[in-house]
Length: 265
Image (cartoon, rainbow, N blue to C red; front, side):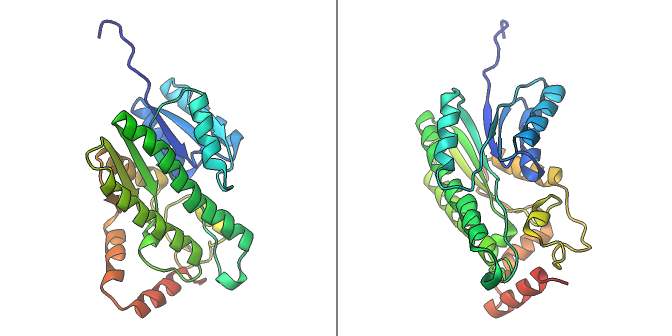
């Protein structure tokens, strides 16, 4: 290599302070990429960056930003460009759920949920995708959920937002064929993280008393799928069956089963 230094490759990861997002960022760091860490909590992000510096001798940029407000995507895009960071991989992982009967839940929380899960994800995809296509290379991974495949009583808004992410991501994965850019939709099932605590759904049948896969193993499946340029990845045989069944069984049964799974025990 004649002493040449390999060019830096940057991967922007939203929701990078905990859970699947942090695990995604760690996988990039281990592979020699530099993850750009984005989340609301700067202290947690700094701790993640410090760990990556100790483990991989890299300086991971930190951008503390609330992505649940309408103008957040443009602010993040502008900040990344102002720092001169060329994003070769984008992981739209940030998201959260509201839990409970729709008539009784918080409209403010659901508005933020829609902003984060749909609006910010869409805008970030658009902004960075245009740069990637112009450059002729890039990878985008939009994190949806197995909730994308059926309506979810008690999590009506969340399931609807993830159905949007699935449909949107699959459509643009087709549009970008031949550009050098790939778009992957990653649909994990319930995962060990602080997601359930924030949604206040610890007493649901989906979570209570259940052993869930850890965020590291789940993120590894999404990372491998993204690197391979796959259109869709659903980790786990049970999750894949669960995603398929709503296509072939009556809609009423799908709703009843969803309510049973998501209702409080």
